[in-house]
Length: 283
Image (cartoon, rainbow, N blue to C red):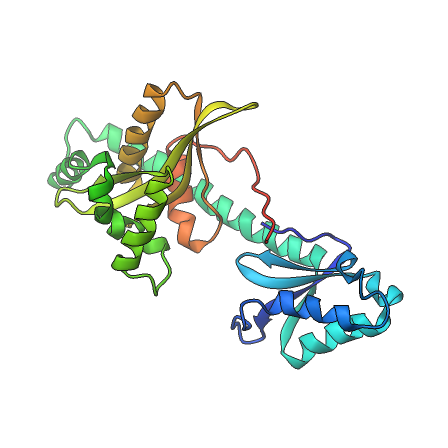
């Protein structure tokens, strides 16, 4: 989700060959250097600020800065050029983001249409199922989902693996998940016939003024083996928890991106709809 404005220029922390610029706090350091300028050093933050765009550190620069303090503006542009960083108008960046999200949504909608078509075809063949269809149906019946207690959290690692950083092994995963669980996050997982976790989520219950009692899924992950049936089984499990707590609805926070496209498609197939946008401010 973008947090820049159309009247800003964005210096992205990505080089021309696609590498992420280091160190990780370069944007904050660059903005801090501006305090050493003779003019406007105490008010530079009115025109320059570090932001986070799709998990990439960036610096947003108000176009007015070129007239207010040309030397400060030129310093920023020279820094970007010297370090081979991309400089783009925020309006163009917004258009890129919208195009990317539109493509992802179109892909998810197309997948839903294909799934609906496939379901219709399968319903016609139910009277005389083939051996392959029978095996697939039996496999779907073997999915089992449940909420995990503190001693079972490690079992969810295979299901969360697709969205975890490459460097995060199971030991660190277990520690991090145990900490989140201790802070109130609950964990549900769906298992296949072999007892392997193929889909999992973190969720919590909360009340709000506008939405009433709501079950929030703030992390959702599934493996290719889960498919629509595995996620449906997981959501049914979470739905029972929501029903027992008399929740009015279930909300799932699934960010855009290739790593989450399967979850988008499966949620659409399960009857979920995108109703809101999440606004983020980097601190």
